[in-house]
Amino acid sequence: MSVPGTKTFAAVDLGASSGRVITGRVGPDTLRLTEAHRFPNRPVRLPEGLRWNILGVYGGVLDGLRAAGPVDSVGIDGWAVDYGLLDADGALLGNPVHYRDARTEGVAERVWATVPPDALYRATGIQYAPFNTLYQLIAARGTPQLASAKRLLLIPDLIAYWLTGEQGTELTNASTTQLLDPRTGDWNQPLADRLGVDLTLFAPLRRPGEPAGALLPAVQREAGLPGPVPVTAVGSHDTASAVAAVPALPGERFAYLCTGTWSLAGLELDAPVITEAGRAANFTNELGLDSTVRFLRNIMGLWLLQECMRAWGLTEVAPLLAEAAHAPGLRSVVDAAAPEFLAPGDMPGRIAAACRATGQPVPRTPGAFTRCVLDSLALAHRTAIHEAQQLAGRAVDVVHIVGGGARNALLCRLTADATGLPVVAGPAEAAALGNVLAQARAHGLPGDLAASRRLIARHQPLTRYEPSGDPAAWRAAARRIQGAQPVRT
Image (tube, rainbow, N blue to C red; front, side):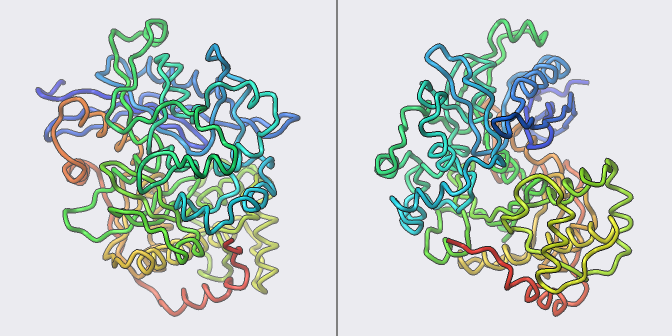
C-alpha cells in the first residue's frame, strides 16, 4: 500500500562477492527496504590474470531493475579502486582487472622512487595498499589497453555509463584512487604530472546527489520500466554509502566498522588528518557525504573466513559460528591486516603458518580456525579504533557495526569485548540504505545526514552489545602478534 509523500528508489549495491538491487520506500517517517534481486560476483582467473566478470555483473543489475519494478530513481554504489577502460567509441577494452591480481607487486617501490611515500601521503592522505588505482595505472603502463584508452571509469561509474550513456567520476570513489587531494576535493595535478598519469582519462567529477543521467530507452525496455527514470549520483564507494547509514544519535561520539569482505574501521571527521603519524599507522582519508572525511584503516575482514570456507568446501556459516562460540577464546590470533592474507587460495594454510611463526597453537578444526579469525578481526578492530582516536584527537563512546558483519553476533560481541566499548550492530544493508537516502534527499525528501540517520535508527532493527570479559587478555593477545605486524612504509 502506497503511503502519501513517499517515493521508491532502487539501490544497485555491488560488493566484492555479490551484488544486489534493493528498493527503498522513503517518506518523512517511512523507510522500508525490499531486496529485489541478489546475484553472485565471482572473479575469473584467465591466463593473463584475475579479472572481474563485469558483463555478468551488468546482467545481474538489469535483472534486478526488472525485478524492482517502477522506481523514482536509481543509484549505484560498489567497491573502490578498480576500473574499466573505454576506447574512443565508448567500448570496453577488456575485462576490468581485479584488485587482488598480482600485477601491482613491486609497483609501489617504483612509484616511491619518484615520489617518496611520505610525500605521496601528504599529497593524497591515502593509506598504502598495493592495489590502489594509482599503482594499477602504473602497472598498466605500456599495455595495449591503456595505450588505446580514451576514458577510465571506476566500476560504479562504468555501470552508470552503460545504463545512461553519460560519463562521470563520483567524488567519494575518486578519493580512493590516490590521485585526489582530500583537502580540495579535486585531482592533484602536480602529483599526476610527476608520475606521468593522464588525468584527462577521468570523466568530470560529480558529487552525491547530482544527476547522473537517465536510463537509456533500450535499458528501460530491457528492464521493463516506464520512463523516464533518472539515475542519481550517490556515495558510489560502498563504504561512503555505508558510513552515511550509521544510525548515530545527534551529538554521539562514535566510531564505525563497515564489515563484510573487508572491515573498514574509523571515524567520521570534518577535515582530513594528514600527518606522519597517520601515515605510519596506515590510516586513509577518503571523502564522504556532506563534506565529511572517512578517516579509517582497511582490515582484511570476513574475507579470511570466506576463503577458509572455500578451501573446506563449505557454504553454510552458521554451524561454524556455533562451533566457534564454544571454542577457547584468544588461543591463537593473527594480524588480520597482514599482506600475506590478501591473495586468494589456501587461507587455512596461511593462518596456520602465521600461528606457527608467532609460537601459537595451530587451530585443528574448522570451528577453531573460525574462532581464530573472529578473535583476530576483533583484535584488529580494537587496534584501529584506539589508534584512530589518538591520531584524530577525538574520543568515542560507542562503536557502530554496519554491513554484513552486523549479522554475526559472535563477531559483534568479541568486538565489544576487545574495544571495551558498547557495540551497536545494524543495519546490515547499510550501503543500500545510504544509497537510497542520498537519492531521496536529491529528489525532494527533506533532511540532512543527521536526519537520515535518525530515520534509520527509528526504522531499522539494531542490537546493542555491552563489553565483558578480561581487557588484560586482549592486551596480551595484541602483544603476541606485535612482532608480526606489517611494515608501514
